[in-house]
Length: 96
Image (cartoon, rainbow, N blue to C red; front, side, top):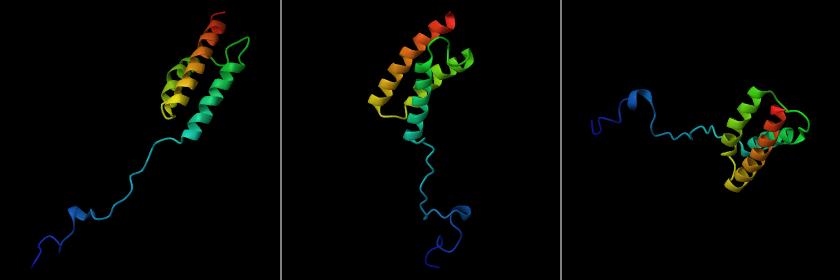
């Protein structure tokens, strides 16, 4: 009986000696970039009417900058700037 703690189960059956890499839930920047560019392209293609309804428009206004946070700072800033410019233009179309 040299070591009392080696003979029994560890931490109620959990093996703390085994290291398991934590699961990452971070999105793939390439997928984020592709989705943002798709939204931006839809906004740019609108010439005489809004590309989406008001609810979708409000959704994109909120979510686009949040999604862009997963990209490098310079790319994020440029995409958000371009999108904000398109949002202003689309809002004029929606008001007409």
